Image (cartoon, rainbow, N blue to C red; front, top):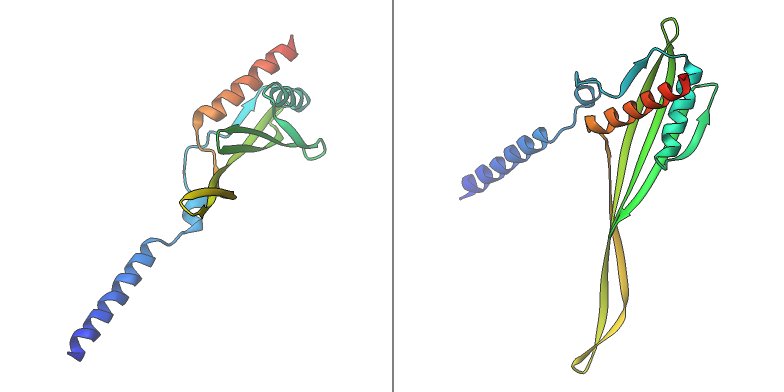
Length: 168
C-alpha cells in the first residue's frame, strides 16, 4: 500500500497549496483599489476658516486632539468609549490642503480599535465547596479602517455647518 500513502500525501499537499493560495493578501489590490472615495471634501473657503471649523467640530464631538500641526495643516484626534466589556477607540487624522483659488480640500482618515476584555473566575475545590481563588483577564484587539460613508458624511456636514457659522 505504499502507493496509497503517497497518493494521500500528494493530495494533502495539493489541498494545502490551494488553501494557502486563496488566503493570500495582495496589498496592491487593496491599497490602490478603485473604491468610492468619500473621505475627502472640498470647501469654497480659505484654509484658515476650515482649520477653525475642523477644530471646533472635533471639540464639540468630545474628541481629544493629540496633534495640531499648523505648518503641515494636520490634526490627529481620538475618541474612546466603553460598552460593557468592549472598549472602542476611534483614531482620526485630518489633513487640510489649499485647493484652487480660495478653496480648501480636507482629507479624513479614520480607524477604530476594538478591545474585548474577557474575565474568568478561578476556584479551588475545598472538599465539595468551590473557594474563589482569583480572576484571570484576557483581551482581544482588532483594528480596522472605518469605511462607513455615513460617518464621513456626518463629520463633513458638521464642518460645513461650522464654516457657515464662522462666515456670518
